[in-house]
View 1 (cartoon, rainbow, N blue to C red):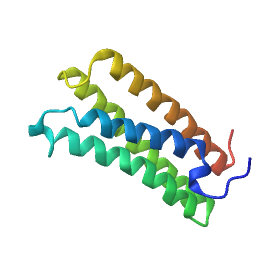
View 2: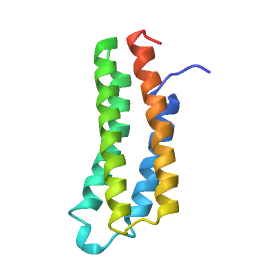
View 3: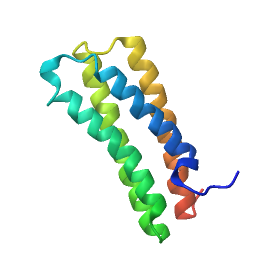
View 4: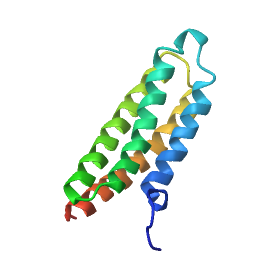
Length: 121
């Protein structure tokens, strides 16, 4: 399979699916969280997919790796915010586990993308 756009990257595809899941789940958060946790986790998940896309569009490998690394940092934010959402009772344990598993898969894919971009294992 050849890669022509950022949409062809499996890391982007899986991260995009996670972002859509986050939007779905946060619709159920309390209304008073709209400017708090709901906004934060949505912004972090959008940053995740946006940085992958921006990295893909960069001309140098160093620039690409930088944006992919920023995407991975945004993913860490998402993971932390999902834990908070679970701990305060906005997400049930089984739903959190499903989202966490998806985020771990995204992390592995991003790490592979970063390593490939950097020319490392």
